[in-house]
Image (spheres, rainbow, N blue to C red):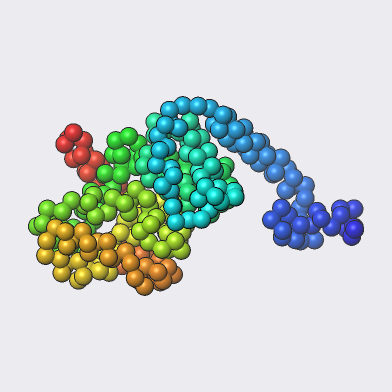
Length: 286
């Protein structure tokens, strides 16, 4: 085994991810850092273990779990390992962790995607917590007030940026929740191609919920002429299903470039102001 001048064997030159460390790597500083970081990892691992052992009513709410990605071979009961078991653990643990939310329809698809990406129960759990607890608050609470609010916010943004479509929706009495609820609930899972969804999620974790509005506005603005061909209520609903298909959304790289240009300026200050107004309106309606 090759040895360095400082006496360290060659394997120490390779980090846990397989990368070779440089000759001047500061082992002392790294080990000091990692000893502190290990405390965080250990604390999280202990919490994860306790969450898995707990029992509450969340198990009874997971009746639709078997319907998660029926066309994905890794989620079939015949798969080895079967990701249904992993999904169950993540959702039960989150129900213990966030009792105010527990389990809500749509969370199974989001957790399922995270499991497919990370291949780790614990990592999927913490990413799910970041989404539901921080990035998308009140989306999956019993009243789903955050979700309902953001659908109304989208309607207001469309009035500002694609007024002809907003007027069409209003003229035919089409509520935004009828055509975009699945976009928000499932974060475009089973709506857009997998590669495109993953690119959107990259931005969602980095930039926050504003990305959902950018994607929705881009889809609507890019297909404005097509949507405006609709002449009645069912026709409008069909148009909104069609705009999530085709090469425009399959070409994920160009699509992601579009979401940062097509909607134009979209500040969090504007979104938060609209959220406040729409939330008050929804609460007043009971």
